[in-house]
Image 1 (cartoon, rainbow, N blue to C red):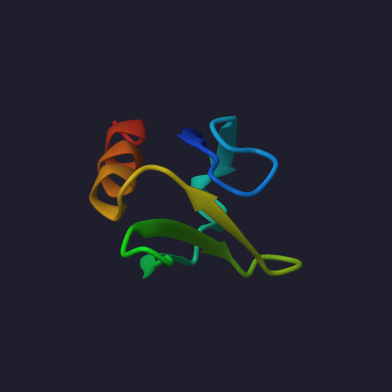
Image 2: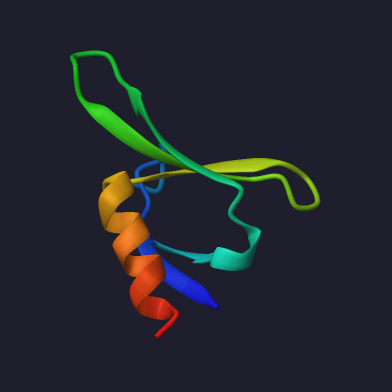
Length: 69
C-alpha cells in the first residue's frame, strides 16, 4: 500500500512522493536551521533511504491509519 506525501528534498520541493507503508521503519522530526522542523521517513528495507516530507509526524501517522481502512 502506498501513501502520497509532499517531498521537501532539494530539487524536489513540493513534488508528490509515493511511499510504500510496508517499507517504513521510522518516522521522526528533525530541526532545521532557523528553527523549523522537517519530517523524515526512513526505510531500511534493501538499501537504506530517508525521505523528507512536508507533513508532520502526526499527519503521516493519520494518513497511514486511513489507508489501512
